[in-house]
Image (cartoon, rainbow, N blue to C red):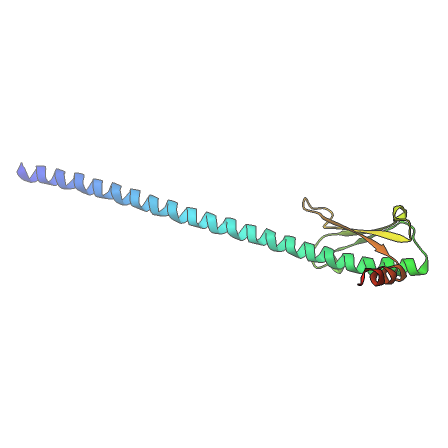
Length: 147
């Protein structure tokens, strides 16, 4: 009889030990899952940030090129409205860019308002606008601003 009581007591202790091990394993799994979720969130955030930086650089480069085109249009005397769509093979990232040229008559001198939007079909479209004057006016303005 004594042996049977000892056997049942040892079985209960083993069951308790197995239960505590199971709780420890579940706690370790929860900690590992939390660490993995944090790492995944950080990676996704970094990817979005890098993509936004790439799009911003693309817009700035397009704006510089469009400003040069606007100066050439002013020199040639063509100031009409125009719009260009650039597709993915011409851009650093997949997407479409829109470049617009419009006369800016409200400034009182020949000028073209250049606008760039990229990527068009995205919730985070970047839009930049620049007012471009003819190079002759820009040179006069630069001389006036020097001391």
